[in-house]
Amino acid sequence: MNGRERILAALGHREPDRVPFDLGSTQVTGIHTVAYRALRDRLGLPPVTPTICDDIQGLALPDDDLLDRLGVDVRGLFPLNSHNDAVGGRIRRELKDAGEEVEAFVDEWGITQHRPYPDGLYFTAVRHPLAGAITVADVAGYRWPNTGDPRRIVGLHDLAVTYRAQGRAVMVKGVLAGIFEMAQRMRGMAPLMMDMASDAALAGALLDKMVELKLAFWEMALPQLRDVVDVISEADDYGTQVSQLISPRMFRRLIKPRLALLFGRIHALAPDAKLFFHSCGNVRPLLPDFIELGVDILNPVHVRATGMNPGELKRDFGRDIVFWGGGVDTQDVLPHGTPAEVRDDVRRNIDALAPGGGFIFNTVHNIQADVPPENVVAMWQALRECGGDS
Image (cartoon, rainbow, N blue to C red; front, side, top):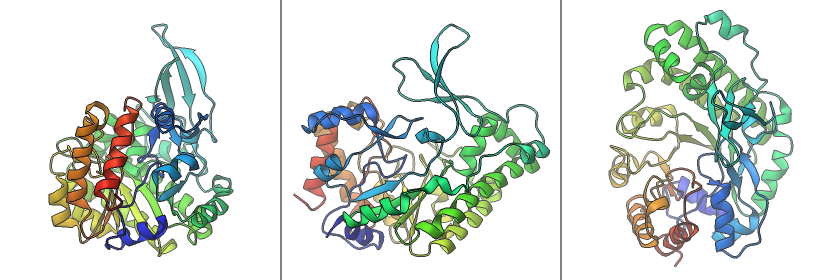
């Protein structure tokens, strides 16, 4: 099997010749530039200046030589947006109130991001453009980015054709975060939570705007890309380490109907592609809702979160949803464990999630800067040994 055939088999709940592997096809399955350089060195690959696919998180777009060495089965398409620094503001240096020098970036949404200078690893939002006392009219009157601008996908169709010719499956992501997460970035987390609890009209106006902006992108992009993409990536974070950021009841009242509109339109625009949905943490109570909404793929399996035991999830939901991620714990084992502990964790998770298909191997989340390259190699070796390619 080539990579695309392997991915499609797993997405069809059939066991491929080996467990498929993803590294870097999205902004939630990637690797930090620091770890990427170290991994290349460990593998004896020549040094490169990494292509940045997400400057906010400091993520590298893996090069073909590394993907070929590791047998990665999928490649991602990254439309132009603020996170790959192709749209919106420019990074500049400035002083904070305490005299600390930071890199500052005001993105196309008007969100101000700071990264410590010179050794910061990622940006953090520090100012939200719709913070404070606002009205529904303020949401309507804000100068929103043109998410449907065709320039965002220039060259992506040809790139996807190239990836297909290489035998890889193709994933495409959108240009803004999930409707709940993006509303937090615009408004601030606490104000949005208060709005959702006490001002449904204001919260609803902002959430509806996020859906509108997402649809503007997908209705522009998918008619041009649907013949060359296999997976469409969406994301929104509802889980914490132990429960959920909002109650399932609030999710079903304020979020689920809007996701139904969004996901229904995506499936109508690209009926042959599978819908990948990322939500960290404990989302077990929401999995029946995700399945009902038409989510084909859950990312990740947050194996250390309450309720996210991989064996139990496979038993209860494995017939209805594909698990993409959860191959190794990224909170403790991958950055802090020994190579032997990494291999043991990989074996446990593959044993739980791979039988019968419906599993694509990836870390629980992005490989961060502090992960030793020997642990990434141990992860990959264990995948090869336990995933059917030893």
